[in-house]
Length: 231
Image (cartoon, rainbow, N blue to C red):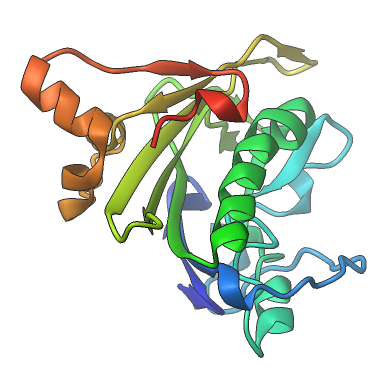
């Protein structure tokens, strides 16, 4: 499903996005104030195929943007892009501490760097679907999310990097019990293995993927601050 500067691929059975893809143009970024934009169903598909407000009422789940609100806000249509991010198709249940801290810090790092050097970047985001995902209010809750970022370095060198955050949740009919979660930089190859997606040539421009192909060993780096990210 196409929106302004981004796209969403939906899962009919899960009623949530399989993945999203957004183009960022840091040189044309526009600050669009958040003014109480309401979340809305997308009329192009049935409401029954989208998880709406009933999933988020009276609990600690945030309506987590998959495409970050600010990412597609560039150029003359920035306000349109901003509104488009508030569709339930671009929404995922994320614990507030997860959505507002770890994921946000990674997104801030990506966006601030594309703005700083005036670069363009493409960011893919999605969940890791597993057969044993816990079901809450009829929706299987994803326990891990990933990002793959493609961009051009200052020296003209293409680059890609990948990230995974474990979203540790224990759900039962009465309560939400929260465990720890960690953010890792992973290889594009690893994300492909977890999601069955094919990122094509991006894996060739990812140092972690090249290292894994050369050594046969998985590469995983725990990220606790922006300085831990290796590009």
